[in-house]
Amino acid sequence: MKKMLLITILATIALFAKDANKTDNINLQTTDMVYQLELKKYPKFLCEAKLKNGEIQKFVSVKSIMLVYTHQDYFKKHKLLKDSIDKIYVYDYLDGTKVEAKKALYMFGSRTVGPHGDDLIPLKNQANVKLFKLKYGGTKLLPFTKISKGLLKYLDM
Image (cartoon, rainbow, N blue to C red):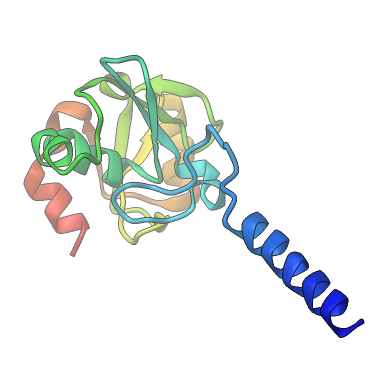
């Protein structure tokens, strides 16, 4: 009787141990590659990059995606990025519209704080810029071409 009970307990432990090590086959990326923050916690700040191999890589903020975009060789060398970035997309902070990053405008110095501190807030047009400024303030509006490595370093301090 004791042997039967012991065998049952060991079999149960082995069964649960096997289930605990199972990995779910989830196709969704759950954390940002730069800051390791959960993507689902910050839906207003999400950005995505379309890689040249067709994959989509999601990021938790403009700052995060731009750090990867400006240092692609580093991220590929360390196997954090599978291929070069083809296009970048951001979501307008006010209405959630997906916009190609090079066409968006970025607000600097607002009262809005990103998932990892100070960040650039993406907006799709001048009308949304005016609305955003009324509600959250902002000191400078930047086009994509004015986002420099120095600015990203400053934001990341």
